[in-house]
Structure formats: C-alpha cells, structure tokens
Length: 136
Image (cartoon, rainbow, N blue to C red):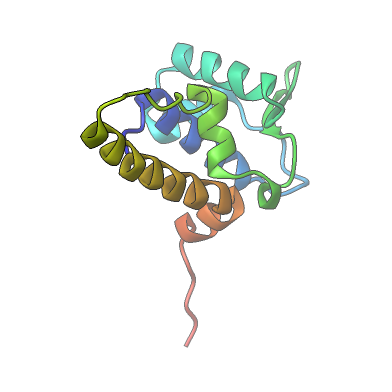
C-alpha cells in the first residue's frame, strides 16, 4: 500500500489534534507544523480538506486554531485517507483470464487493507503514540 506524503501529513495532524484535552485551546497550524516538520502552507491545504470532510473544525481569532470535529473514537484512519486522497480507484476491466485472476487477488488485498483502515480509530493510534508513564 502506498500512502502519499499529503495523506501521511494529514494523519499526523489528526493525531496531534486527538491529543488535545477537551479544555485545551485549539491547536494552531504553526504548532502542528513545527511538531511534525510539515510545511505550513501545505498543512493549511490539508486541514481545509479535513474540515470539508467534517473531520476537523476551526476556530477563528487570536485564540483560534483546529480541533477534531468528532471524538477520536469515531474517526477512522480510512476516513482521513479518503478525505485526502479520495476513494479507491475502481478495478480495471480485463477480458484476459490471467489478468482477471490477478485482479481478484489485488481486489482481496485492497479489501483487507480497507478493513484494517476502517477499523483503526484515531483514538487507538493516539493511544499507541503516547508515551507511557510506568510507576513501580
């Protein structure tokens, strides 16, 4: 599976927003950009796509920024990737038997990938990415 740089940046931005506590101020573009080495201008475009898809919300003003539009437990990695790269391309039609046999395998691989992406929530990823404090 190939993931575009734009999609990777979108996932990183959404994960940064998932770490916000409910009473935290919205996260500014500059903070996300610096934290993950994403060019600010590029990040603006990514966040606009995510906002248009209903995944993030913005607040204007001096205390403005971005936060998730829904709880991280209800946003999947598949939704983020689809918001940025669009839906998967339809399979190519072929009349040749060998090509049809291969296409059935590729289709199964894409379905397995989509299942993992659609079952992985941003909250699960944020939990994996957060450092754990161990007290003994």
